[in-house]
Length: 124
Image (tube, rainbow, N blue to C red; front, side, top):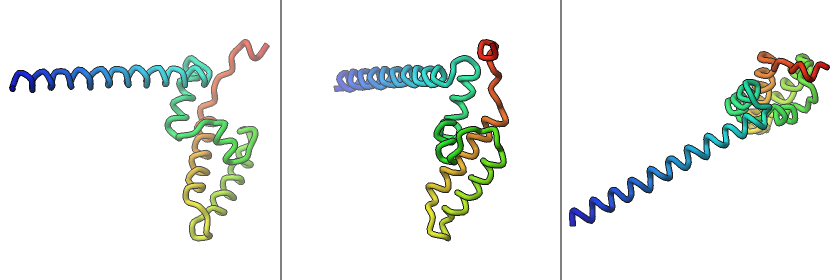
């Protein structure tokens, strides 16, 4: 009886270990793919980290705040203030939408404070 119990325990541990290793490999591959999508290299890794930290991409943040360029800080702030005020829960707004607006502003602020250096190829 103990022999079978030990075999079951060893087999179960092997299955869990293999599943954990497979999940770890998939997560690593997904993070590498996200960094490549974001531009590769250090800039891609930085952008992927910012996307993960705020939970949204820069493109999504632009869509939430309805801006096309992130160079005009005053326009971004005015859009943020308006959308935040309109979606106040006390006025019948949505806390979910309000939190999306906050996250969008945070994501754009991250991009503004840490601008990505331009490649020399793009300048020519």
